[in-house]
Length: 88
Image (tube, rainbow, N blue to C red):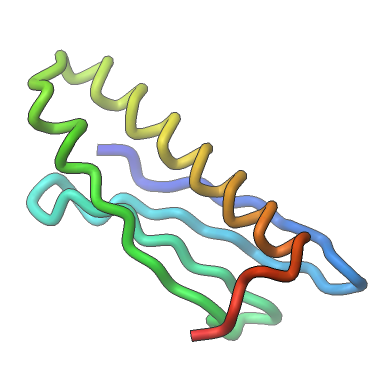
């Protein structure tokens, strides 16, 4: 299990903290949160059961999950910059 990844995305004078956390293989979800000044602005769960059913060796599974986290953070960051992320 990979714990998570974080990035700061700056846009129009605001600093947004984008956090992606692995909720564990039992739930098989990543949870992505966007914060500004400690306030949660947006939350979404991203399922990853498709990665688990591949039955990859542990290191390869972790690499796939890490890549999914990084892609997710990049996508959310791009949505922030384009003004497409709406508060929950």
